[in-house]
Length: 136
Image: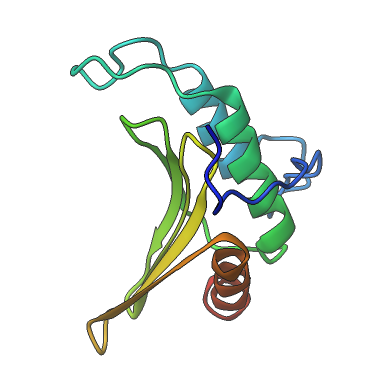
C-alpha cells in the first residue's frame, strides 16, 4: 500500500555522482550491496530490500546531489527502507525512502542541537537545499 506521502519519481538512469573514470560510484557500490542482501541479512529475520526502493533512492540522489558531492552511506532498514545519510562536523542529513515509498528527510544541526524532518515534496526540497549547501 502506498501512503499519501509517497512521491513518485522515475528513477534516474544517470546516477553517477563524482566519478567519470568508469569505476562504480559510492552510490552504485552501496546500492548493489543492498540489492544483494538475502533473507535474515540483519540476523533478526529481515526480508531482502525491494529493488524498487533502492532504485528510487538512487534516482533521487542522482537528481538532487551536487555533481561532486561528499560521500555518504546508504543504509538498509529492517523495515524495508533505505536511508542515505551524511554525518559532518556541523550537520547530519538523511534522506529516507520507506518500503511503501514514502520519502522523508531529516536534518540535525549539530551546533544548535536541533532537528527538522519533512515528508514528500517538502522532504525533496529540503534535501536538495541542504545538499547544495553542505554536500558540495
